[in-house]
Image (cartoon, rainbow, N blue to C red; front, side, top):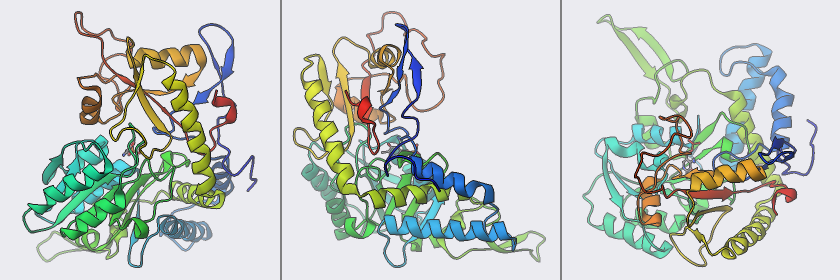
Length: 422
Ligand code: PMP
């Protein structure tokens, strides 16, 4: 495939958008935390393979064989990218939300789940069918470990799972994953890492972080939409009923003596990949892993820190701006910054940035309502939220209500064009 631009050059860097004030500008996409632009290289790799794709694990035809090989090779690439240990497996899913719901469906009977209230809803909500202990927002990484230790200390015997984010989609702050994993293990619990926001910015290794599972989304990792991953230990996964029942999950199906059907499920974690596999999605995700590995995280982190420092210094010059932080000054942070602007509804502020400057940022409560409530110190409301709107966009707030206190989020990462920075 043709390798256009630098190794981390992204698609869409030349998109022109109209301004309300007249004229047009080059669009500045600064909402990587929602979905990052795909890397040009990933796009090229996918385009080179696209004419040849076929059905995976289903046939002796040349293209089926080629697609099966690329699908399994993609699984190996992702396993390597995520520092999988011997015995760990990669399950391809639709995205992080899907991965965490899959794990929730596979938990042994009686599992107690521990989760901080600060999580993205995708990591907060899937466990509700189990016994869940919700942990209060910690105000430092050390407090996070202490809070978890205290909760696990008094927990009854039996299977336990801790779910924690690697980097917050709101504050960008990095969580002490290895320390939390060690605390979990000291108390016989396992840990799943929500790396949706960490993996695009920092190396994520199951072995080094000592986590049991990791979940992430391709569309935040500079691949196009389509695939996500749940990777890690297999024992619970292979003992559980398949997440989806169907072809691919089943090894043998027969009519039983009682007139029903008897099913033998596959014995690997891939029993949770029922249906025709999304080979293009998996291939794109693996291509992104390869591109990031080859470019190297050192350079990526250095450039991101430089951009982060400029953004933070610029925001500090505006007295009306309050940057949202859970861990406070000096916290380790990826390229995700949220803030409120005194006197402004964040949704109006974001709309003005788009209409007047061609800058795309996120507004709202970022699918992390309990965290926003803690950070804002009051209720906000949720325009710009994930999910299809229930009211027509732009509907006025009910008369007499205080203006909503919504935040604005700026996020960036690999391949953020220089011309977008100022
Ligand atoms: N966890 C975090 C920290 C996220 O930021 C997101 C997406 N905003 C998710 C989980 C869910 O990812 P997806 O929408 O790709 O399933």
